[in-house]
Length: 320
Image 1 (cartoon, helix red, strand yellow):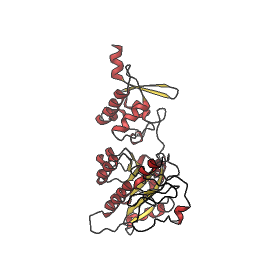
Image 2 (cartoon, helix red, strand yellow):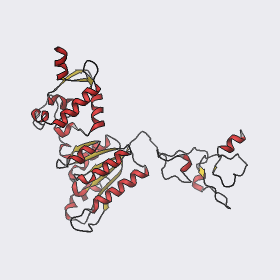
Image 3 (tube, helix red, strand yellow):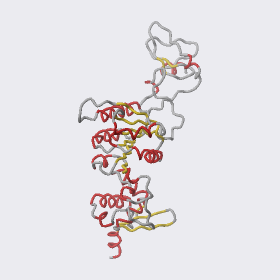
Image 4 (cartoon, one colour):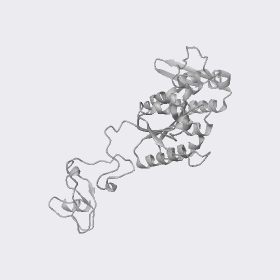
């Protein structure tokens, strides 16, 4: 038993640690680094937690690499997703900040809220009334040269710092600038979700790169449903002419369908979210089922809370 503890790097009570090797405090289980010719002393704040097992909250950091006070404190609620809300104030409307925060709250808690821009500029005056009420921290960035947006670079640097620190579980980027597309792709490569918000003028590369992109014009507006007026919804003919949209839905239905061609709507939505960003509200529909029904190329079967989807071409082949 004693040899096993010694080989594992531990120290028995009353014994001195082996010189030149790392040691583990016998009660707190916190990794300490052996200092040559000096005794290791626990800080007073650390002694208060003696007897409590230490667990690092960062998935990329192991117990052995955390020396003394860890930079990744233990989370109180590990089930709650932490979202970093980063706003490009130069390319985002201040009037939509409340509904954007409401959307972010559906995915997690916005524990980081920052807005970037040159706050001495006159066109950012509208943002001043929205910063303090919603606990958004203004990040000042001077324009070093004409025609260059230094705020974008500052926002990217902060995003990478948050990503490397492991202090968030996802990002919400508010901007209509396609320059953030490489940043989105970099965050996605680490397995984190990116929720984008911008105006309809946002270029498609940025829209398609996000895990989910929502146009801010549709936020805060009463969405249409299948049994309501569809004055604001995209015309079905225009939906059917959208080749990307039709192929996206058809491929998802085919991948999730059984032998009879029917697929659960939840499975279809999961396949779509794994492929590209698709928010039904961008087309004027409240739910995915309403959008698919509006396209007119699919059959929907509703049974209580379960919704099934089938391609109409499959139904024709079955009847013939």
